[in-house]
Image (cartoon, rainbow, N blue to C red; front, side, top):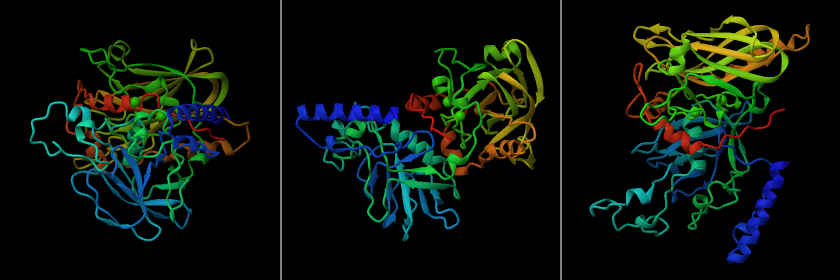
Length: 449
Ligand SMILES: [Ca+2]
Ligand SMILES: [Ca+2]
């Protein structure tokens, strides 16, 4: 409700400004009576059956799709659920996937766009773009920076899609695809200049998400020890955007260090060195009965990042007097090998422990796996206990984190680990920081029942 009121005010303000400015396109937009695409798990659609723009996520419903430099996923209806299932994924690069879009199929594709002011700042004169214009007839050296936060966020979600993933299509009619958004993607480039306010009501949202119980820690605050700051700049590497990633209800599926949904901890940080472990303390705001704690963590196993060797759990009513619950167990063995292959490498994995007790504070201490100083956490979940005798609590808590332990595709791993990797004990790469900055402030917690 609050959001729609705010939106109404914004629309009213825009209408007023537009009247003075003398054009009318934005004034005609009336927001639908539902939430727009969020930037953490939805894939916002900005453009339909048009690939002439940069920095957009689009839907293609007909013809063939063979565009290079675009992350793309081919979807088709899933009879069993009525949702749309990803049937092919393409990681981008210099060649396109060459898909023929069949009846009832569609492609969702994302291109991040170019930062033209930077690219054209010091021309030599033999660049492919030199003296050229884009599809909107704008000289490249007058084009804006098309890299924008909203599109980057939706591109990141699209990149994490794996074959078999199910999505619900919202706000678009495949027989006549029209995007419902407060700014059209057109030669005005308002989707760039007003990107912070840009909202699309046409999007894909993960199928069945609303029915998943993410526990009672969602939205709760926490303190943490063991993040790593670059010694030369003091900037935290792989940061925890808005200090909220570990309880934002977003369960990452991409274990790569380029995934901004992950928060990095490092065994070489001064706090870890001092205590011998990294630590997170959650505040549930009131003493509640707890049945289970679950941590979702990356087990990349290829870039100096591994699932921690040990998680130890504690509970407390007052944040002073602690009861040790014990050491948790993984849903799969993070170190299992088949020859040289880490069977469960390149996955998100779960470490959990059953709890009998009540607490306001939950403490998680964790130690790195030797040779892998980095530990990347995605979520800490706490599940409440129902009244004694209610058997639904066990079932609920055991099914809730089931969405992780997903295998990331090898293509995804390649792109998310990029050219250089944080290695061994001291490795550090700035790439992910850029991705995180792009997402800063964009975390949205979807309301759940
Ligand atoms: Ca999270
Ligand atoms: Ca992060």
